[in-house]
Image 1: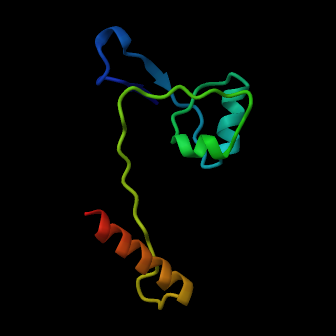
Image 2: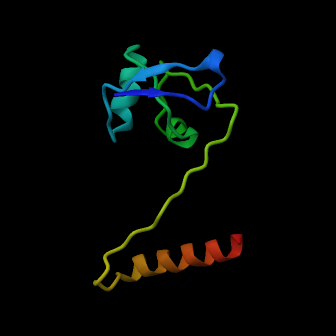
Length: 96
């Protein structure tokens, strides 16, 4: 798969070939450390999974990320899960 970064100025546009995708951060960072490629990831994830052979280069433009909280549709939540859902709902209401 090739991806063109059309939002970049023409002088900075690149093509990339995605040859590996993984949910395992350790695998991704291992490939980056072994010079097999580069990765785009959230700063907090990289800070948590420190790898001395990988450096972070902050992007100049912010990228927004949307997250969801999912739970089983027809099952009653456990006490701790219900407390967590209530906490999240209250936190979101306060941030509006």
